[in-house]
Image 1 (tube, helix red, strand yellow):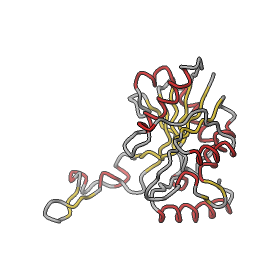
Image 2 (tube, rainbow, N blue to C red):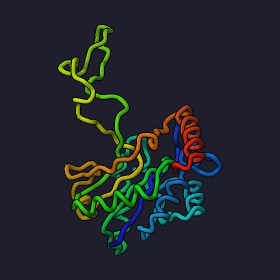
Image 3 (cartoon, rainbow, N blue to C red):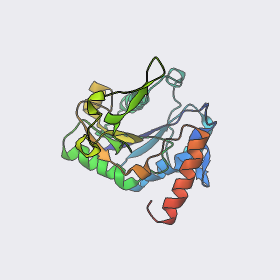
Length: 233
């Protein structure tokens, strides 16, 4: 099997300037994703898709390839992950590359573990699924969630579950924002990782941390230090 990892990492982050290469406990945060991909021994190529020469240079220093610069039309705030991965696959195939599976790995996922990436690969093959993605559980039963209505008052989103016990409600999951696997032939047709034939790769909640704001960044560093000291990572 020929597998390729794609790490989207455009420049121009607004909320956290230089986010994809900002030092996270001593090294650029993207280095964690590159290293996790390399440690799996699964990939023929680990490619960083970027429009930034600085990101490209740092990515190469940590072992990734940057064989092209991402075109401007795929570098705005509205371009999704799938479009970036599709562009990379099409670029490779136009040069005669044959690819069986692709794995998209986010650049700002320092808690990512190579064993979870490997597990995703094994699951997507075992179940002959179109795709697999990292997910984790919500910390609170979402079916007992509330909202603020137009009058400023609280109301349940699903009032039918007002008296339901937590243990009687289905477990709900959300995207862990770490990695996505897909069988390339089918992915090229569906053009999305969250397909109707996606299988979950469940990761522990303590390994999932969105990093969208400076506060998120600080929280992630504190958690990482704690888990590293306890040899959890």
